Length: 407
Image 1 (cartoon, rainbow, N blue to C red):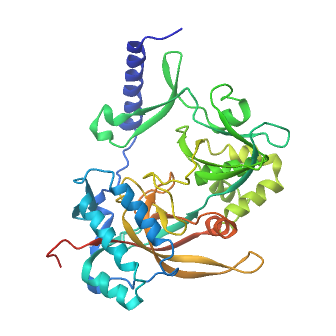
Image 2: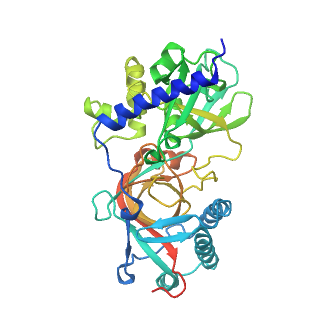
Image 3: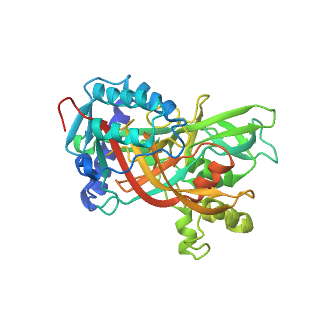
């Protein structure tokens, strides 16, 4: 039976009132850091040493992608860097002048002199207020699949279900700007969307969502959900790229933390690879461990993927994911942290400090606050190793062209 739109609207309003009272009224409020307080402008005498460990490779591509984003938004939009404000036009000029300069492949000395003379530098306050940022990594995994379900290929990659709805709370109250809830409409009420266990073990999406491909490994799909995009190598010889479309709105819970808390894996040895090894060795625990995370991701085909949250193609080693609520999108950054050195057997034999330029082009569910950053490593064996093991601290800086006449 078709429900009248007035009834649906009234139901959603009632739900929103109840939701707001429970979530925002009774629960203690969590104060989000303001954009003004997540970074500080530093004086030129305390600038870091600027260098680029991969000799500017890929940097031009990444800057051009940020420029393509900036050129599509209003010229007067504000970008907040500590107490300073810059509009879109200034951000474009800032990136363009930096691009023109690095195309000359400058020496480290020339690079530092150029930045000293022409750019303001801002440092993230980090998670400790003194600039410490935890860096992790992500990558684009390869999966094996088919367009037809079979005994070998039986795990689905779903597109967005037709009964999933998104409610933008800011439309109802300005103080909920950026807040939304995801659910489903059933029996004249709005309900939370199905959890992972209901989807994977109870067939909750039967007839509700298109299957983009069937894959041969459930753990591969779980990590695809974490990474947000991947390539599926089909049994007919084709390759399709799948990209994050939306989620079920359920909270993300770390299975890594679960395995540490249950003393199955130590903190020191924790990695994506170690989780996979544990699950393969203990298949009887697979469902319980994976279902600990009720969050579920839905995908779409993206020929030009993977894309970041500003809808530009990510550049391996150059695109970073930051908290989208507090850091300026498309901004030029300098990252300082550590990367793995791999031996001929594909094993990490050491971690080496590195410094390079990157662009803020993505975000992530677990990337919150000024003390978290996620580096996109790309595709392939090294990318998988680096992304799976990286959890190292460092610092994060932003560069913006000085306005005319400023010091």
